[in-house]
Image (cartoon, rainbow, N blue to C red; front, top):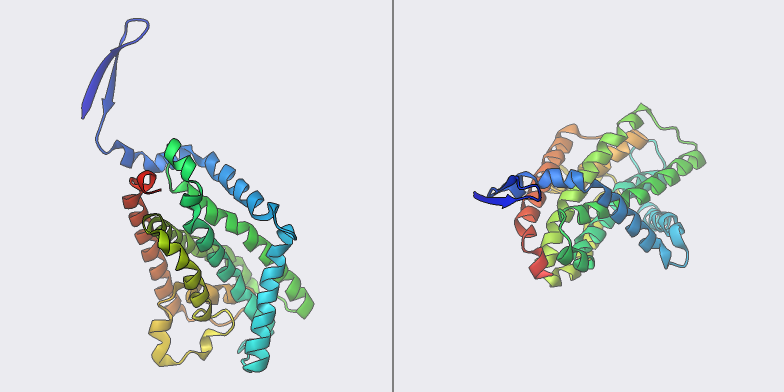
Length: 283
């Protein structure tokens, strides 16, 4: 601890105390103090994302619909997969697209967010966690748009959701925490190892095929269940389908996915905080 004595204009002595570790204790308080920065960065990202596109915000509607159409044709028509529940196959696919699109968008945007804001990081102090977190928050806009499309598809197919829909906000929070934890970890890795930005699109593409977006978890054989549910998105997608379509969910395996979500969130926060002090030098 260091103490400095200074004299103010009215000749009163002012004591300034600098305590080691104070920045760590005040970090979370600083995030709350800079909460308006969440709004500024999120709104900026939303405008930049659609400002120079030809079709603008309509891309948020076209992309999930096209993906659902492709999965429905390939898995539903050609491969002959069926939905074990009462909902049409297209609704099952789109219900899986809701959380997956949010996760993939969050991962893509947050992992490159610090590098894209290098000038801001090297000149101004603020908790660096705000930048990747705002990128995840921005993805909530696409999730809201996709949810409206989901309601429209339910009307089209004449499918009425059950009371399980009331639990959907809880699964959205779980999805947000998982996306945040994974995004923070990959963001820190991407700053230290710039070549890692080429691996992230592969991770997203590979994850799409090992996650039950175009198929139901019921097709997985028992001997593969443990490895299958190591993917936290499995439990999250099954939870979304339980809320929206009243599809069956295996609560024991979902609880395992929930544990994985919080472990990854803890790992992401810890690694990001450990690497944060070197971001300005690495960028």
